Image (cartoon, rainbow, N blue to C red; front, side):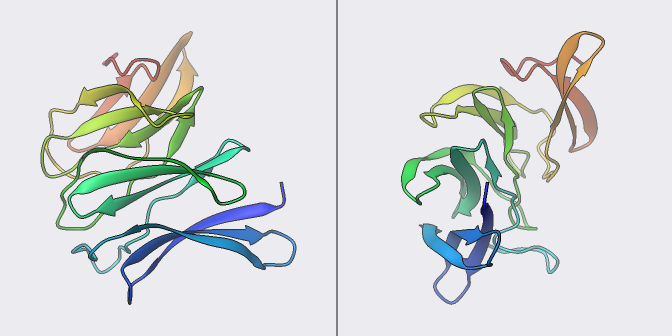
Amino acid sequence: RDRIFVVSCREDGADRILLCVNRESGEILWERTVVRAPLERKHGLNSCASGTPATDGELVFVTFLDRTEMLAAAYDFAGNCRWLVRPGPFSSVHGYCTSVVLFENLVILNGDHDGDAYLVALDRASGKTVWKTPRENKTRSYCAPIIRQIDGRTQMLLSGSKCVASYDPHDGSRHW
């Protein structure tokens, strides 16, 4: 398509925003405040808009930190919010960064943080939680999982806090 989606943070107003930019001209077509929340404590090399958005060609999916909770949202290409959810807590001394991974009808997010860590899959159309899998290592990790077919099995690989693990992206069950 002819659009580029970018996330940013207006630190003066504590707005986490989604921008839609025309690919040809660089013109900002629209800007939406996804959440307004106090700026989180973060590492000097991090930002308050570090996660990478993703699109399926119809919707664009973003994630930010809203105080102590992960926030995920879906917008259509006209800038209308289709859904906004808070799938779980998130705490880290280094700030927030979870990038969106799309798989079939799911939006998958890494919730590894300094607490009860998890992976969560949301329904693309509604934002409802489809599955949520606990992670035993309660330490921050900012890696996005990758999904591949390996030996005839769909595997979601995550190099995260203190381990590398494989999960079934359909239901969140762990392979190894």
